[in-house]
Length: 301
Image (cartoon, rainbow, N blue to C red; front, side):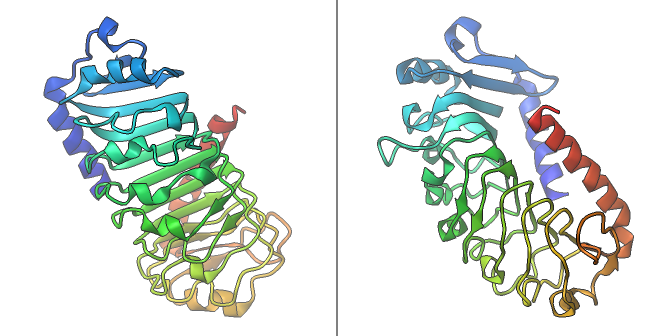
């Protein structure tokens, strides 16, 4: 609800000045005007001077949606977003390896940014997550079909206001201990990846902030006995589509006082892998369709 309110207020405040810059001045970037906001797209701009000249036309303005696509992060000026307020940042097929080592355009963003979406990110293991720490307004991070193999403890230095995190598809194999320990995440989804194991230590010792947890359609075979210990606010847990042959009582017992087990065993396991409170059954059904639709869109099927 807070996220929806923030979006509405941002759009309403921006509605009075929703005008694209002159096309010639903005080239090679493009601007698309919608009913109450603009979207700026800079696609395939490999010359940093051309990119800077284009984005300079936006200084002192608010851009609701900004997309960087088909480029290397090392070629993007580190101060590219200076004096530009961006609410939602999208990247598509961006190479995250940095030849300069410290060149990071995200460092020039301010706390106006509350959502980031990364699609088909390349070499994401080279990205310095600690550079995002100062973005106090960032609430949501979505990563789709990207070349991200591991999420390490440095990820926990992300802004403390980050509440929603999703990795869907791609090359993810490992989430290391401490990866989320410094965060106050409420909604976590890691699905359609190569993830084969989980540790309770990836989350904070006190997991009471977590409300939605989805590890659907991965390669999980077992879970540690204490995996869900302390997650007293969890309303939805989805483990469907993995290689779990069983869910021992000691694993799910901490949740049974808050959630009702529902048998949805369509795969190999003899236990229903989806646990949710009875009143949220309809939400789970809607979530299932939402995720399927996203996956179909992302893979082109």
